[in-house]
Amino acid sequence: MKVAPASDSSLLVVFGDVMSLDNHERVMSLFRALQRLNDPRIRNLHPAYASILIDFDPLRLSHEEAASLIENLAGEQSLQYDRAANIVTIPVCYDVEFAPDLQEVANHAKIPNHEVIQLHSSATYRVHFLGFTPGFAYLGGLPDTLHVPRLATPRKHVPAGSVAIAGTQAGIYPVDSPGGWRLIGRTPVRIFDPGATQPTRLKPGDRVEFSAIDRATFHSTVNR
Amino acid sequence: MPIRVQNPGLLTTIQDLGRSGYSHLGISAGGAADSLAMRIANILVGNAENAATLEMTLAGATLEFDEESIVALTGGECECRINGDTAPMWQAMRVPARGILACGATKTGARLYLAIQGGLDVRPIMGSASTNIAGHFGGFEGRGLRKGDLLGVRRGPNSRLPTLKPGAVDGLYSREPLRVTRGAQHHWFGLEAFGKLLSCPYTVSEQSNRSGLRLKGEPISPRVRSQLLTEGVSLGAIQVPQDEQPIILFVDQQTTGGYPKIANVIAADLYRVGQLRPREQVRFIEVVIPRAIDLLREQEEWLKQIFQSQRNRYTDRS
Image (cartoon, rainbow over all chains, first blue to last red; front, side, top):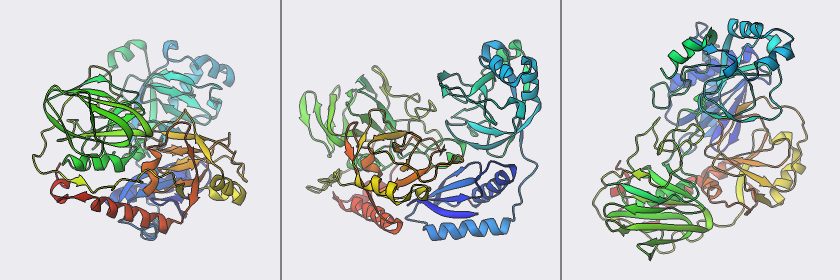
């Protein structure tokens, strides 16, 4: 673990330089320890694949104090990561209407369309962190066969709820936004609900499963 | 007691001091781009510093007030009129019932802040009234204002208002170089590249907004050409993407990013980033972190001392 200033108001804690389950679990255990600490001098936590950026009020907490606080937490917790993580099931309609890139993904993987769906909806994913837009979860655990490069030119408009893959990752677009990932389906459930007590459907550390639904179910569930 | 938007200007949004504690959900803090001007505007009308204000960008808005209101306009330099008469910035002023407040284009600076006594009546989302444009939430329907929008105002305190001491904000928007500390990946760049950032002028590109300011100038080549694993990014970070042109990440930034950061604008200078105009030139100078924190402390002290009359009577209200 390396702790270094990123700015006059933040420290960056780095556990490694690769995306791995091991690094993820170390990030999550420090992240949860910091959340439990609930120190009012700490304003924001930005967990990522193998690091956490900790943003604080430098007039109330010095970099030295913040660093020793982090080192103490990392020492005492000895990585007691909660393995019984929250499991969230996301219904997905893979109908062609919502999956403009499904055919290309199938071509790239050299498998039929239904196998893409089968592979995507049978894996269990892990939320490594959220970023890009409010509520956008970067999911690790995409089956190797489905690793495809992102679009050469990103779309200017991707509808909220679009289920997408790119490289080794999977995700769901929570709000209408631009995006360069391959769209293979859409979920009718709200991924981001700013007024709710828990504004995002997914949180760092959650496990995620996708379950295939048909168009009728999609339309009867939408907006609920 | 609504305010009707007659002309929204270029981009006018509702902003307070932003929302803390949601970055791990991909939600940036947001808030006023020039928080210093925004806080001063609120103090001048007797509001809590965090009351919801209007942030206008480059071209100001024209607003019609249903009821008599006390307002203050701060930020970049602009021509402001109330019912056609020139009205001063940086002090409380009265807009009569049915009065029209017209803010012109900024002649210097990029943003104006209008505080209305009582504060705009906005339901806080995740603890803040600030508009999050990318997330389509907060402020007024999660978007910039449009012609015809009606804004509610909370009833304000009816007390003596502070004024600024003469000349208090002269030189607030100096053209001095922006002060930076070393970024999380400054060692990826080496002395030559870091020296270039500190010695060459950069121009603010037209493709700049509240998420980031794109700069154009001497390319900054990293010494290490490897892919950075996506990590959390700090406010004011100066990242260098493949095109080697730096970007200052700003209040509506993404919470994570995959480009190396060479430097970071200090907290005490972020308000000046909020006033940079497209095509304006900017330079950087390095300070060490302890100095940056002293400068922030001095700025907070300064803010307490620029007002005449008992400021404390007004600051703790909400």
